[in-house]
Length: 238
Image (cartoon, rainbow, N blue to C red):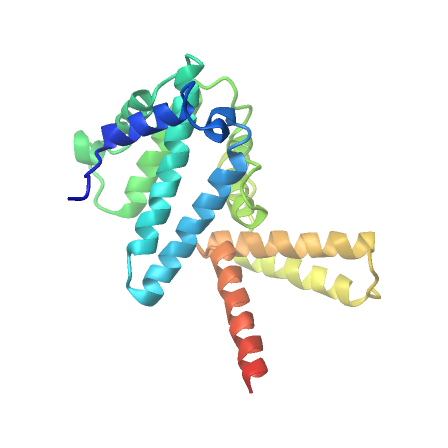
């Protein structure tokens, strides 16, 4: 009969891998060295969701979620060895956060729409961040490690909320048209500072339009790339 592992068994497996008599590779890992692994595994979960939508087969999604869990537990184990915190502390922390940020479920705050829920969430999060000394400003709360297409709308949203940076859809369209006009006036070169500037203006205007329309430009571009691949492969088959 196949052995059934529990969550506690899994934690013990990771401890064993990191132990003196464990795996040489696992023992060498640090928070820094594991950064690329976590990024790759997170991307593979996103890919697994796409595959599940296409095939209806959940096996790959289950496997990739396990790989992300492995990364989380590895980081927690390294932290435990450094005397910082344990996996139990991580679970405790996130459980407390979920209860704290859902007062409409676990408290007496009313919120009948997802918009109200997000408002409450942001207000509670703001109060939590005030206690964190490493947060220099609301704009710097958005990690620079995020892909730029994902990060830009988040920074723009906070710039709007905290610093009065308010562009309307029409203003963004004007900026977009102006940048495109300037770009058309340029002669394409291998590298040109003015072209780089106008492409940057276009990307920021599109990012703000995406923000105002509540669109994921990262997902939109991903889908467009997939369309291009299918188109090219379709032509190649003919």
